[in-house]
Image (cartoon, rainbow, N blue to C red; front, side):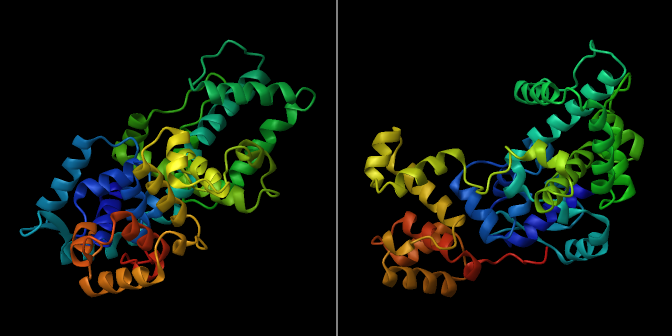
Amino acid sequence: MLLDYILLIHFKQIKGERTDAAIFHILKGKQSIQTVQDIHIFNLEKFYGAARFLNKKQFDGRVENLRVTEKIKEQAETNQFAVTQKGIDWLKENKSAVPINYFNGYRYDRTASEFYERLLLLIQTFTNSKMNNFSFIPVISNRSAENWVKSFYGKTIGSRQEVLPMLYKELAMLLSHSSRRESEIFVDRLSGYNVYGLSINQLATAYGLENEDVSLMLTGVIHHILSMVEKETNKYPLMGHIIQDLINTSALSHSAAATLYLLNKRYSIPQIASRRQLKDNTIYDHIVEIAYNNDQFPVTNYVSKDKQDLIIKTIQHAQTLKLKEIKKSLGDEFSYFEIRLVLAAYRHLLKIGDTNE
């Protein structure tokens, strides 16, 4: 049900302005400027990368099921989907049963999996160490997480007895903010001494859920934990230590961050493209991404105030966020880069997705 609910939210927010492929890219966390733009202007930031486990066949099957059950309908003129009144009613009926407010994908997408793998391996390592068992099979094969846990383990000589009680206390406090079922699913996934956590399939069977919903639920709880730890690190010192090198104050991709560094050094776009061996258009995409992450971005350095005003008026008059249609209305003297940048800079004014979802 959770995946269906999230898909319907996407269709409701997008309002026929994008194809279902755009929704798939959002849930998979595609690193493209189009996807970054979509999550901001349709108020879908929290779902970015929330379903990386999803393949296209699974996605298409769920969309088809929503169509067959008449929660969405295909618009003949565009071949895109819109939510029906039946779908709207279903969203209202089930709103209290789904933990969608846990999600914060754009903020934690690159952090969540590394944090979770560190936590799983940390718990397994210290519970086995307590029983003097040093030959267990790690549940995580991520070299980065393994190296972090080894380093942490080495630094706790003389204080290892304190780690597990602290972990238990902090996790108990954090999970108290989730429902009992969500907390139990999270705990049942953990491995310890002579105990291996349940697989996604086993959890789905045990709790009468679909595999996709279990994966989404775990992702949501992880995002929720990260949010609470980040806000109150003093309250959760051990968890804070686990995430301290993972949380970045910027949601920028590494490539866009590298471009920002050079922009701040006063390099021109052609110079940056040459220096980084990238196309000019890629640097333009980075600039748009930077603008989405900086409310004070100097748009006028790239688009004149007159052009900005005309782009905004055109979008508001056309009542569409489809770039091709906006570009057609504006004419050849406007570039796609200029339109994208204005969309980024004035996203709060031009956003069409409901902000209370």
